[in-house]
Length: 308
Image 1 (spheres, rainbow, N blue to C red):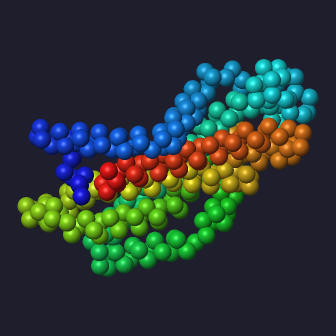
Image 2 (image 1 turned 30 degrees about the vertical axis):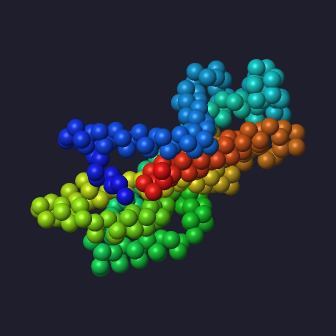
Image 3 (image 1 turned 60 degrees about the vertical axis):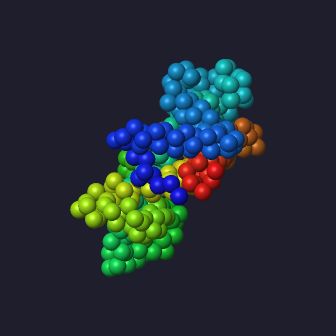
């Protein structure tokens, strides 16, 4: 089985450079064979571009009501609103773009936090083993025994009640989700390190006097990047759903900021007269999570050395 350490990001010799280019080509070739993963990646890029360039893609204010609004949502096409308006006369197309910013940012930052924490704890447990492994895994088991959604509801409710600033609430949600979602990553990294620390290249690194930090960062961690990448990709979809649930229940992103979950929650009251206000954000959540899962499947096959 080919090891990532055999093809470091900055190879020192032409032979190593050729091997690195070959492995990168093989990874891309295997990913391209997964048509749904390619489609998912294209969809995610399109959604990300729309979120980033939202001010240039719509001239409406996402928090302002249309002057023609008379207390009921405007139907799609009326007064220049391509997708109609919500219950307060705000342009739905614009709010979908800005809501994508919030939902994708929450998912990305929260996953980065959980990956950093989970990788650190899993690497320590897997590399040192023994008492360190036992203590860290019992800590992981303790966090796993806590029901995530009820705890998130309590913590975000406390934050929302103690502060009226939407930006503080946003930051708190990102930190809370990230700090409570690292356990699966820790177990994954621990399992990889338990196997990798017994490999010949690890023993060779110890024999030449490499320290623990160098062995972990230079030899073991690069070989655990593949499962971590796949887990991170799949967790992005999970966090988007989690944030949407929190916002739908009223404990997530607070007004005037828009997220797909909060848009879905606000559309409940007028779902019979303005179903489009609920369909569009729900469809965006569905499409984004589905695309992320397909990309994760494609990466899992592309980074698996046993798949030809």
